[in-house]
Length: 345
Ligand SMILES: [Zn+2]
Ligand SMILES: [Zn+2]
Image 1 (cartoon, rainbow, N blue to C red):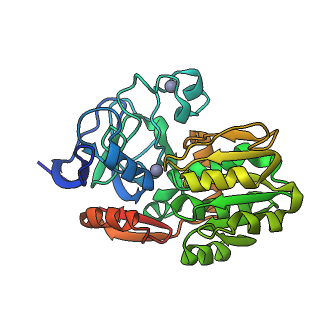
Image 2 (tube, helix red, strand yellow):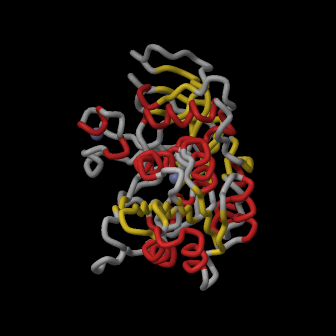
């Protein structure tokens, strides 16, 4: 029997383990993918520390791309060798949200057995992965699957958050991006490609702020400094920040967003660091919309891939052999990854 290495979640509070598994065979309707690359996402640290609320071990990796290796019975319209991105949030496929391609907001999310490959089902940190339906595949054209694995989360998630706020992002508006890691570095590129708004990048790390300037941030602010809110208000003037995109979600970033947005603005909290947004009259200011976007839709992944095909966005990728996964997660925890780490099986 052909075997492969896989990086598995064992139980909450334990580091991942590398195990040998048989290469799976696709059942009816399923597709077997030969994995080219699997992105290493900060939310995996959340999964490793706290689990996903369901028992059982599974292969990690929810940000995947590769080539079709085998088609299950009844699958048509694809052929072996096609390069594909794997859409990550696997919904029921038939509810109202899933029917609009927004499987990230599947109405049956609480009753389906997993949130996706790498999030309950076996994901892409392995030589091969099973995708339960061909509807979850998006063609990559001539993009390199290993380098584009991060598009399906690190780019799709900010794209979804930005697209929903686009009408506010006028030439005289200011967008604040907090956290210039895997998602933040894609958010800056997406903003530059889609909007004329001024962009302030905030992070506590000087090298990341430098990176933000290279990616087109108009201003950078070290949010570890006590003067950060004041610096941001100096840039925006009385209007304040129009859209704050928080890719950290910790108490200090949530408090900062709430203190610098103006009236009739928007705060989108994407990061999972456990902060709480408090509300009192006019604080955050009147008219502020608060959103908690989660991932993105399949059609938005198509749009992200189209944007990457024009060369307007590209994930800055550090690649590592799959065998180094445990060490890569430690590096991610210590904030030592530049852009996105991708494991190559
Ligand atoms: Zn993720
Ligand atoms: Zn659904």
